[in-house]
Length: 76
Image 1 (tube, rainbow, N blue to C red):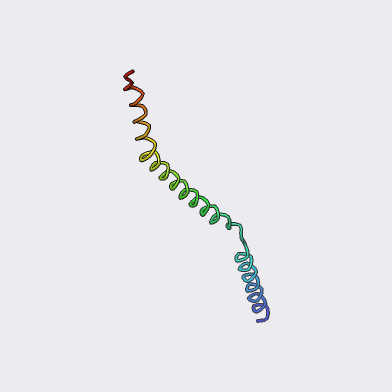
Image 2: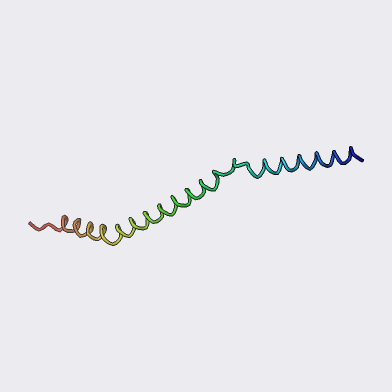
């Protein structure tokens, strides 16, 4: 009976040690950080592209077409 009790106690101690090792392991910690960094860069890139698209569509392209038309409509 004492041998059985010792085996059960040793098995319990091994399981506690394994649980502590698993809980204190931090080898997968970088995945979340990398995911957040990628998400932030995608959002900032999308905002930058939207801003450039708006700038070119509303400000630069109409002015550019007027200037090009003015260059070719020279009557001098």
